[in-house]
Image 1 (cartoon, one colour):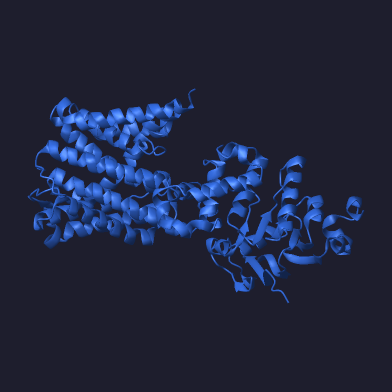
Image 2 (cartoon, each protein chain N blue to C red):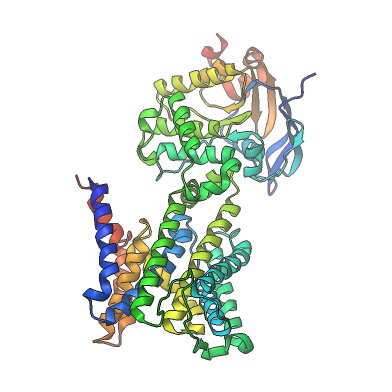
Length: 314
Length: 256
């Protein structure tokens, strides 16, 4: 019964998202595109945080290099967008493999600090390597060519690009969901609860952590790859450590215990930011208060708290 | 001559100046059930921690089926066929009972379908988990959250996870600690039945002497990290020093 209802709600949300350009003001197409991209970014982060129990403070590195990969390719080649996104995914995964190789062996705060340090290093490289990244100006002014697969779409049209983002994010989310529900995902959950016991079951915990970290990096790279064409620029801010904080905040806001929690958190984050900044400059103050209340009273997040209550109910 | 399952020579673990385990040497033969007894602080758990890879020995060597496993990480030792349970329940409380067993089974079967495991739940593993739970009479609890089942049932889940990795050498650390007499009886019967299948070699630490004398082929008595006695139950029972140091001279029950 509840399962049916959940499916129904998801189908309705999906239908509304598809119809969005026809039912909301133009402005909201931009808002929801951003929510979808940041939601994927946060969901990729939650694979290592909520599922595997590793708090990474360097996740923007993979998001950022994905953004730069697609921006640079769109600028310098005639490649279709989908091909650029494939490269963004591979770049994110490759960087995550390297950073993860050194980080996953460490536990808790040491892991967090090392990922933060690596994130800062990647930011420094992106910021300083002017000949490739154009320094603080970033990569801008690239043309949106074609999507690929022989589809003739005007990607420059925000409403078209919105639908492209929606399709890709939904597909990626479905894939990520399968990973979370798989035998592999089960082991990740077990590692969060009790890594030592997993080792005594004969599993190499470091290798599973590295695999999770790399997969998360790939999905973050994809989100970054979608972000650059949306913003029409890949700038160092996308790699900055403050960008690494966003998926952490979104996951906590939405709830790390449910798969869609980070998406929900991304939605709240972006909408609150939009609404609150329209009447006060102190958006960060309000966000801070909300987060403090969440952590003190609703540790399971907004979606998490609601679903906990609803699923427990008869 | 058959090769011993476990050959331990001069095994020693020092913490600072204190030797928790001091120069233990011992061979365990295949299909044997060896009980390890000794007062708290005798070094039994440290001994297990070295055998299972949780601690690296200060000195000495451990051979499992002729292969040197001294100082290997826990997952390697587990993969080779040595599995242990824990004195304090050490399971995945937020997952279902079946999922707990699945994790342990994945290690053993993992390689065969590794790539598919990333995107789907491994069916054969689920079926095997159900079979194992049935064997331990835990089927009714399969979908219950492991954290909410009774203490005794958690101890059984712990044992199910140990068996799931298909070990040839099983290290049980006080499997009946804190159990009701009924549950203790269940575990004792289980260990005896498993020993009779001839698939396993058991090491078992235990405080309950009736369990020890019921299941053990041989008994190692540890005292302050050293071997106080090693022999068949009747030999150990009659050993004057064991009676003095551990069993207590006045314990009439044990003499009978």
